[in-house]
Image (cartoon, rainbow, N blue to C red; front, top):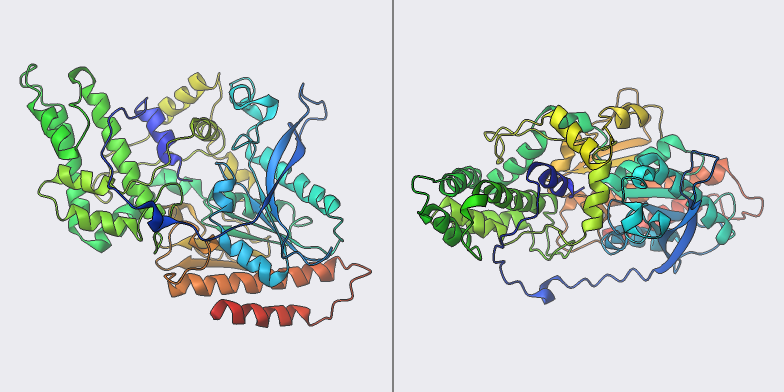
Amino acid sequence: MMLYYQFYKSFIFGGLLVLVVEALSISPSSFVDTFDPNVTEYYFDTIVDHFNFRPTADAKFPLRYFCNDQYYANSSSPVLFYAGNEAPIDQFVKNSGFLFEAAQQLEAMVVFAEHRYYGKSFPFGSPEIALSPQKISYLTVEQAMADFNTLSVHIREKWQMKRDTAFIVAGGSYGGNLALWLRLKNPNLWAGALASSATPLKHLLRESNAFSKIVADVYGNVSTTCPDLIRKGWKDLFHYMNDNSDENDNSGRKIVQEELNLCHIPLPEQQEQQAYEIYGWISGALETMVQYGYPYPTNFYNPGPAYPFKVACENMLLEKSPLASLRAAAQHNLLLTDDDWVGIAWGYQCCTEVYQPMPTNGITDIELPYQPNKTEYFKRCQNRWDGVTPRPDWEEMTFMSSNIQAGSNIFLTSGQLDPWRAAGIQSLPHHASDSIIVRIIDDGAHHLDLRSSHPMDPPSVRKVREEELENFIRWIQQWKEMYPSSSNKEPANKSALLLRKSMTVLSS
């Protein structure tokens, strides 16, 4: 879900940042991943429009997925299925090691399915054609869920799985939403769902600055001075960029260049736009360092240190001015900015079902005050996508919002540090089944529980992973009891044996 900032910038600021902040030199060897997912790439011909019996000109397209079957024992063994996000799926393959750890204990297959219109899964032959206003209308949550449903059926057939093979769907962030909704909508296909850092309550993002307030609180918990430095930095940035006391005097913009270590002095005719672009870039960096504030160095999207927000705040405190403090913080920018196709596709989704403009007040958060204008937002969407208008309440109406009491076998997690927790289900719904579990992970960032186990993991996430695995085993056993295979000769107590074995391994 990190692409909120890219969409926000493209609509509010209207262009990419043309000024460059010199980044801190970080040794790549500090962030080498030792995890090898050992996956094989496959493609599955999925239908372009699942909800129209009259086929499109190109009726199908190849949807990419990755598979690891090294632990897969037999045709009754379970499948752990990751529902892909708004990015190339290989990014999540490399950063979701818990599923592989669980697969080893469960003798399971692992599948990572790519979301249509991302990565290499484009209909109509190319991203250029697929992402045009005339062809992008098949990019919806419902179509993506139908892809994953039909892919699960295809995998059953391809590997000749028996009916008692349980498919557990998992995902993080937007992928967590999909996992939640797949289980709610199709419990006949999915034995259970792990929804990590899911954000199904978009109205909470639109109604307050809860998202941005979490970011401010995280920095404030490192030092109460850091949020104040950031707010003063914005004030100084716009003061110096808009100092027009003498049109021939560039002293204010020169100060900005020097303090932020920019490549050149901002141009006077673009000073307002460039001030907002600088703000957007640094603001996005500050948010991303909290969202991906893992307790150890990572290279998820871009290399970063352990608890990057803490490092950024501590560096800010060493500087002599608020502007210089902003530069010190931005040195650890983790933003991904190298995939234009991702930004276009996610921008379209934010103009249809994923409607999440967020207000800020500049007092309890560390942003400039901003109140989204619904009329202007809609107009931009209509102009960009040939008349397309967002449906703000469609997603929650269609996928039950927090009213998931009728569901079962769902494990919801949110990180206490993660700003997207503001749109998560953080408590058990009234009259919900005890098979729906909600956990807030102390000192946890965005879908930390899906990542590989690490010596620096906080105890909270270790405990949650144990619970997740315990529930996986329970769901698998329930599925086998509901859909028994006539040739299934497994002992009745195998579930308990697996549970004891798994708990021993995870706690060691």
